[in-house]
Length: 90
Image 1: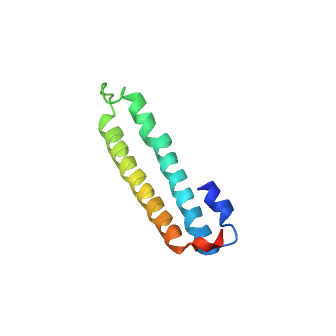
Image 2: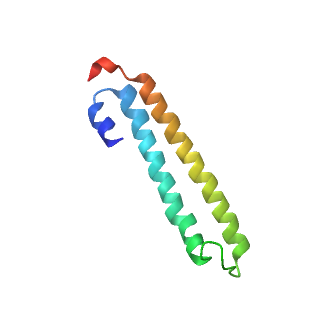
Image 3: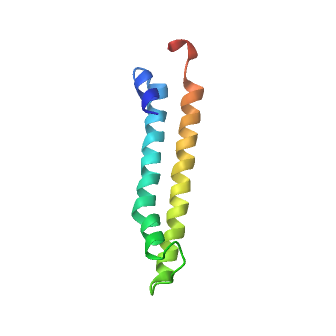
């Protein structure tokens, strides 16, 4: 995506969807490292049941949902960028 951003830096029809895709993927990674990974670590990948496991499980499930949404948005934005590019512009 960084290469596409550089190559199409003068074409906003491709630049902005690609930048949006990159931001969405960064957001998906942030969700994983802030909520999903710590829950996996505390529970030993769900082999250990801590006292607050219900709240932890809820947050873990919603973090997966949020990550999936961000990844789907990234894919949609990349598809838009591909459809908007002019192959003759490179």
